Each structure stands twice: as C-alpha cells, then as structure tokens.
Amino acid sequence: MENRTIGVALLGLGTVGFGTYKVLKTQREEMKYKIGAQLELRWILVRNKEKAMSKIDEPELVTDRFEDVLNDKKVEIVIELVGGTTFAGDYIEAALRAGKHVVTANKDLIASDHGRLMDLAKENGCDLMFEAAVAGAIPVITPLKQSLAANHLTEVMGIVNGTTNFILTRMEQEGMDFGEALSLATELGYAEADPTADVEGLDAARKVAIMASIAFNSRVSVEDVWTEGITKITADDIRYAQEMGCCIKLIGMAHSDGASIEAYVAPMLIPKRHPLAAVNDSYNAVFVRGDAVKDAMFQGRGAGEMPTASAVVGDVFDVARNIVHGCNARISCTCYRHLPVAKMEDVYSRYFLRVEVDDRIGVLAELADVFARHLVSVDQIIQKQRHISYRTAGKNIVTDEKVAFAGIGAEQELPGAEIVVITDVVREGDFRKAVQCIRDKKGTRRICSMIRVYSSDTQDR
Image 1 (tube, rainbow, N blue to C red):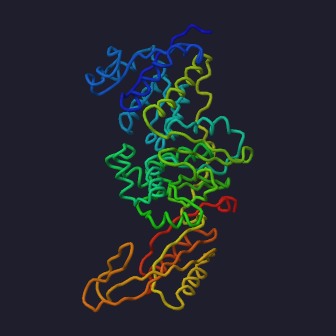
Image 2 (spheres, rainbow, N blue to C red):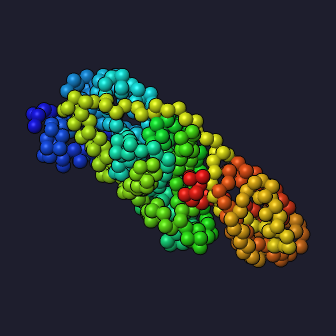
C-alpha cells in the first residue's frame, strides 16, 4: 500500500457540499484501503466564511478566495459544488488548466458545455467526472461509459426528476389534482419555491442531454432536447391511464437507431408491466437497452444531501485511484460520432388523445376520416357520453365538467361526448396536423389532453 496523501479542495458548502464534507469524514479511516492513499481536505471555498465556519469542525479550512485553492500545489482534486454556470465554469476551467482533477455535480454546466470541458481535461491530462450530475446516488454515467461499453445502446430512458415523480404518484394513489400534489411536494421539501425547472421538464432535459451524449457517443446539447412538463396532466388523465393498465410518468427519453438520435422529455403512459411503472414518490430510475445486455435498470434516490454526496465522493475515490496508479485521463470524451438529433415532428410514437365534442350522429366517422387523411392509424376509439350544458352565444369558458357559453342567448342543455383515441405507432408531425384539424372542426369543444404512450414497438420499428 502506497503511503501517500492526496490534497482535496471543496468548492461550496451548501446542501450537497455539506453532505460531501460529512461523507469524506466518515470514510477517513477506510480511505487508505479503498484507494491506496489518504485524502486530505485542505480548503473549503465559500462566499460567507462566518456561516460556513460555524457548520464544521475544521473552520481553519474555510476560505473565500479561489486563489488559495488554485495556488496550493498539494491540491490535486477539486470538487465543484457551487452550482450554476458562471463562477462554477470559471473555477472548473481554471482548475483543469492548472492540472488539477475535477469532480462536479453540476448538470447545468455539463449539459451545456460538456464537450469543451472534456477536451480541456484531456489536453491537461486531467480527470473530469460528473456521476452526480444525473440521478443523484444512482450509478448511471460510469456504467454507460465503462460497464456497458461493449454494447450498441439503442435506448436510455428514465424517471430523472424526483419532484415530478412525487407529484404524479400522489395524483395516482390519492386522487389529488396537480395543484394539490404540487402544494404537498412543496410542503415536504420535494419542490423548490419556484418549481418551474422541475414541473416544466427543464431539469430532466439537462440530464437527458448528458445521458444521450454518453450512450450514443455523439454530442447532444440541452437545446436539442424537446421538453414538455406535467402541468397539464389532470385527474381524468390519471384515471384513464389506470383503466388502460398504465400509469403516467414524466419520462426522459433518448433513443437511437444508429443513424440519428431522438431526445425528449414528456409525460408518458407507461404500461404497469414495465419496470419504470413501479418507481414511485421521489425515487429515480434509468432504463437501458443494448444489443448485448438487453434490458437493465438502475434505481434509487435521485437527489438529496447524502445520496448526491455518495456519487460525488465515489468519483473522488475513482480519481484518487487513478492518481495512485498514474492513469488519469484514461477515459476522456467519448463523443466520437456526429449523429443528427431528429426533429420532434419526425419522431414516432403511440398517442392517447382525449377530446370533447358535440354528441351527434356521425362524429366518430368524422374523426376517423381526419385521422385517415393524415396517415394516422388508430388502434381504439372510445366514446364516453357526458351531459354538458352551455349557452348558444357568447364566450367559451371551459371547466372540467362543463362548457359554458356566457353571454346573450337562452341557455340550452345540449349533450356532449368525450372521445378517447389510442393510436398505433405514428409520426408526430402527422398526428399533430390531425389534432389541429380536429381542434378547428365546428363540433369540437376542446382538446383535453394529448399524451404519448410507451411501447417497445415504437423503439423497434
């Protein structure tokens, strides 16, 4: 066993930073056995020194000057947990140029600047590791780069945002509507004060960009990822999904046929038999399909102080082992292909469509005709009659249970019907044109929902 000490600097002492500090302390006695060397925490960079010094046992390590870290030749590993893309990007770039290895959990930065930073790390003979940037404690990045490297991967999909998964689970299991479930998630600390990045799918999109780049060896930026959130999912949608033997999950999807890449985030009906259907509350999971491994799934805590710290320190141990054995930068950027990212209109999927129409003779035939003219093959059409009242003139006001036309005119009780359509695998561009045609028809009262339906047939087409 080599009698060696490796200096480490921690940038940031927020939630994950403090968790990382605690894990480094608890692992101190076993490091020499797991790594072959001892790690020495030499600096903790923060903005508020007084606050940080009151949180830890070693206040002498705290600094608010990055130069202390950069100029310390004994610091060989820099752990960036500042977050954001401005200061964090400057710190990482400066550390790599100084020949220091970097471990980060910064999904924003990796999703937007992964290629350049990986190239910079290679130029300087450094490791840049970011396991914690996707799915917290769940090992995803390392398996994709190493354990599954012998595969031609065709699909990486998953539940990679715990907030939205918690909300959808409460809607399914307790019959809550979206607003109620979001309020509960906020109360319990699963949702931020501003939940936009979570509920609109933006957080998941960053993770999809990272996973797709690694899985398919071709660079995908977050701007390439089509993104939809869960704010339009209703209790009715959840109920229909259950009747179909499905549940609704916000899915981050990356698929490749070897010629192009599909990358998107969207709510999706998942059959109950699929492993992802059983992943509930704040848990995350990533499902992988390859030619040799076939199907595999990784599941666990996707965020939080200690789960994310687990992934961070795991990367630190890996870098330290490489230092001990003189083999840093052995796995650099793996994006050696240049595959185009498909436009969403060219992506194929099955769809669930729910629409309210006037209840009259011929309405189903008219819908079937629209779909046929737009090359949309229909698997099922189900009509569910509802009694919907409205006035004959005025402005359209829509609620879940009725359509009310407020204005001049005698109120009439006119029957309405809810139509549920399940398509076969169709091109999204064709389907959207058909839906727009239906929306413009005189007898259409509203398009209630349009949700993708997962099917292995979609990916094996």
